[in-house]
Image (cartoon, rainbow, N blue to C red; front, side, top):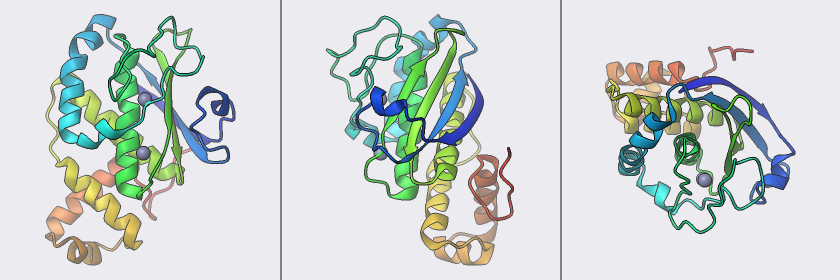
Length: 218
Ligand SMILES: [Zn+2]
Ligand SMILES: [Zn+2]
């Protein structure tokens, strides 16, 4: 998969597509291309799903409204399926999982009770998808989506991440809650060594977490 771009906005058309989006909230739109053949994603999806459920057990409690409304989701009627996340048996399942992991990370970092998402497949090009994430802070949603994307692609490709997911989330959450960016203060808050704190701060930077010394890319 390739993450093409993430843009913030309201995307008013979403109000029609998913009644769960609160009307005036902000959203981000992440455009993702799949880069492998269909069989690759379909074959890997069960392991990906179970792997992610292990990392983010709370995904089981997500309410998924994907497919309850009429929108260009190709030719599937998935309303009869009873999984916590709607599964259609196609490439969109993988991208849709990125959506749910983004939502989950965002909820953990920002203490959001309810946030909705939606994954749409383009008619043309067929391998392009838009993932919409409802948010309070587009920058936090963008980080959550970048991080979720990295976790999914590394699991799909069988590459190991040289970081601890829970530490990255814990650090993001600590910064959000405290408003502190100083290495010393954060290390004390988290009861971590400076080295560990620095390592995780660098990771946040890598995944575009909003840090005051970073300029947001246009
Ligand atoms: Zn869903
Ligand atoms: Zn949520």
